[in-house]
Image (cartoon, rainbow, N blue to C red):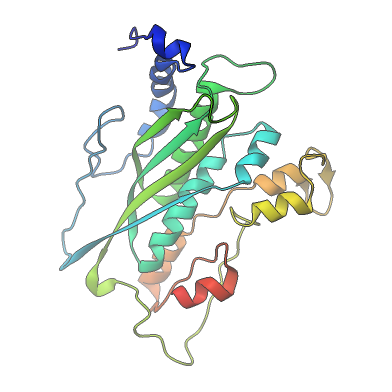
Length: 272
């Protein structure tokens, strides 16, 4: 398969052999996410997972999908792509945990302008960039306790600039229906607990980029009040709340959970 090639594809701007190299580069990162239940390895047509439903009376699958949004532009400007995958995982698993569901597995989708194996100029490009992105996705899966069982990389010459990319993901979780958190038992006098964020997470970055004028700003400048550079602060990964929330559910009578994302309190608290 690695010797497979297409002159016609290459003339159209697509290097199909680069994808094979990408799989080799990311395999170790993917495999470190594997948990009991993973049936397949990466590279097949589908990711296989056998969930453990022992002790469950009515298992329910809970799914969620999301992307990273224009925070990707910060990653491009910083030429750092190994944390943006954490954001992608977080935005998905932090949603399904609101139902009390434990994420089981994750899949990602990366669209890139040009999939070039070599580094170009001073930037990480092509396959190396994708491997860095997937490294972050794998780290996010480890933090969430779920497995990265598959994904897709698409090359879009003519639609995207060579160094541009977009990233989205999809997760499936599992919860027993009697333990489903659906707000039906909420009552006046219930205690509200807030878990802190690490910053903007992956929300509102179109406004963030405008406020800080990131295209012209010195993202590498260190600010004492931040304890880091502006770019590092803006690129700080989204907190993955899965494990602490699952511990809360085990320790207390949790009646509702909200993942505070783009719409803030006004939009997201009523959703719980």
